[in-house]
Image 1 (cartoon, one colour):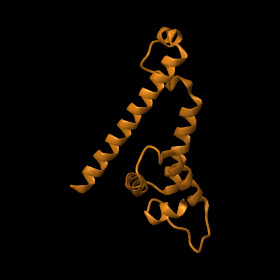
Image 2 (tube, one colour; image 1 turned 90 degrees about the vertical axis):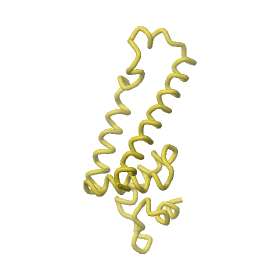
Image 3 (spheres, one colour; image 1 turned 135 degrees about the vertical axis):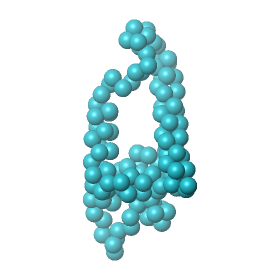
Image 4 (cartoon, helix red, strand yellow; image 1 turned 45 degrees about the vertical axis):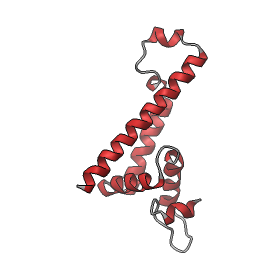
Length: 121
């Protein structure tokens, strides 16, 4: 699996199969995002981010944001009033979460393609 990411230039290939922290960090991020973005989109997005700050700083920012949001239940249903959230059945919560996940996915895709379009001009 990792070999595919190296071959597609999504991740930097190790030297003589000697893996380092940067490879593990890249694998974690790709593992989290591979169901959202294609390999080409991941390659472009990661390259864009790394071009603007170091891989270590990029990873640290990503993990800090991920951990903060994963621990923060308030990001769920941020568009609904508290009373609406309490009145929802489990099925409604699942449907709402699925829709919200899709909308966030779509937003991330649009943002990435704006970057791609801007870089092609």
